[in-house]
Image 1 (tube, rainbow, N blue to C red):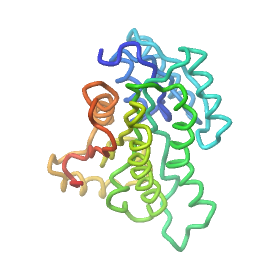
Image 2: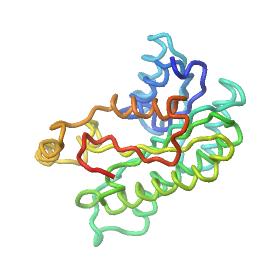
Image 3: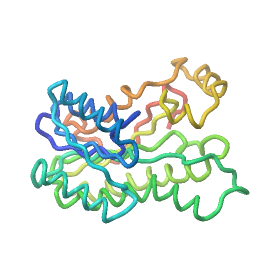
Image 4: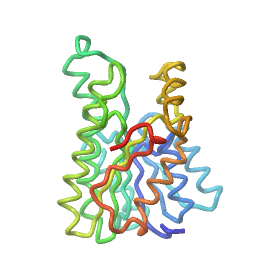
Length: 250
């Protein structure tokens, strides 16, 4: 119960890694706002599972690429749990599609950047006035942000690399206020993301080339995020922690 009575917002908190994070934070005592944009059924199931385990969670729909909806998310958090936010986990994001350079238009590039980068900036900006000393912000980037990603991942990898830089910049700006900002860079994690965007044979090859010889689990990413959110990481700031089974060393 490292996070007992802490208030946490998890964007993209209803499924895959976001679901695992929501469940883990709640299991450690946090009161969790589970944000979703499209998959309401999955988000409701996540909240129900938290409540069934004795935790506290509320559901809120918001497109976190839109500032007005982000403001609504923060307002809903305050209405549910008071004028404080202790933990912000920015997980909302995605690849949208694999597109090589000659198939990519401006609208696609802008959409991917908004989803993975702008969203984290907007939610952080809106939550910041209600975060005080001891607060923790965790941005979930990707191994693609370090190595450029696979075929057709130019926009995605660029956005995730920029998110890592945003994490470092925010750590410098918010650190003097006692707010820690860190990031996570998951590698190959067995989620619907790779079910959609990665071929089975590609996944098998990557897993075989990973020192631990397997894909990661969403729960393992959630465990790392819970550490960064807790006082156990009280002197960790500006880090982008790799969770990839040793596939890539930063």
